[in-house]
Length: 231
Image (cartoon, rainbow, N blue to C red):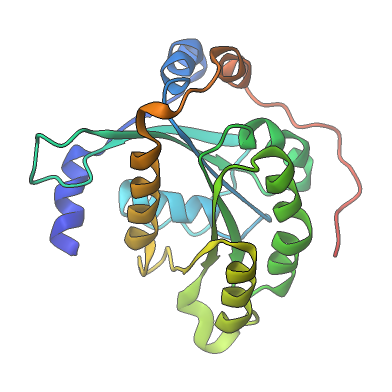
């Protein structure tokens, strides 16, 4: 598994949007499937993405607005004849200040990761009572993956038992993973599943240029502070 990850890393090329080339990147993003992470603040969404993209661990990175990355990868590095898989990976902020922005990224998503911290019951409640509803409204056709994070802390801090999350996922028709960005546990299997889903979407996926350009038009500005959501 480790050697495969290293081989895949050779083929993994990232294009990070900057303010100067947002329009050009948006046109490229408009032609690829979109994968979106959503969940409460401090659930480890960015650390999860960083572990996959860079194979490192960033324990305290707060996303401001969103981070959009174009990922290109070969599902089987040893076979150069197989087509390259591309997808736009959008890591969204969990802060309530940016909650109103989530629908614009969810629309048209092929995969949505509902992320919660297995050591924080409130983050799981938010998935059940807030984020699931937004996905139903704005990304009804997306393949949804329920992702528990911070598995490395589970022996002493777990608040959401595996059976509870697994039953919720099964009843909702979601795929389910428990992961640790710190140790890397189950991160690669999670994204292998995502790559397979994106690969099946393939050429049939088309995202409106106008929507993508609107998303990338300017740096994200936070809406006014609103009353905090609670379960």
